[in-house]
Length: 88
Image 1 (tube, helix red, strand yellow):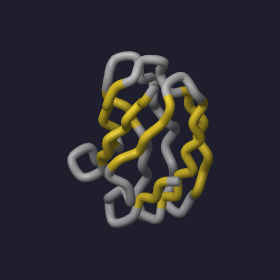
Image 2 (cartoon, rainbow, N blue to C red):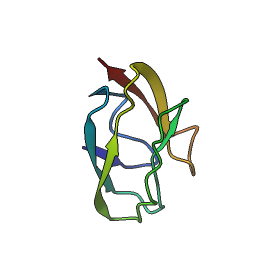
Image 3 (cartoon, rainbow, N blue to C red):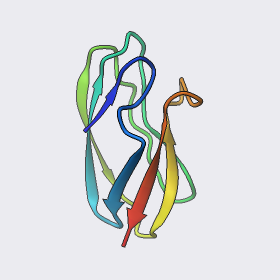
Image 4 (cartoon, rainbow, N blue to C red):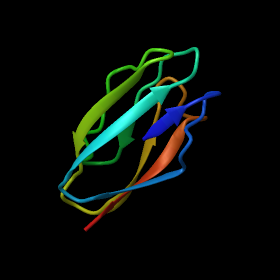
């Protein structure tokens, strides 16, 4: 579960297992839309926009290759970012 509030995420680090499905439960408590965009080769993480006041589930498959990636909001990349660790 992650939450957006005051143009910030409530997490700094998220850890997932390589190759497994992941469900992000995303609550947007802000007055602007947000999304999740993964930065890194082979990550393929791009959620739909989440409207203000909305909570949605976003299903994604972690890459098979372990590594550490950045996840940002495309609309607020300087303020809204966290580390995503993909572990074996």
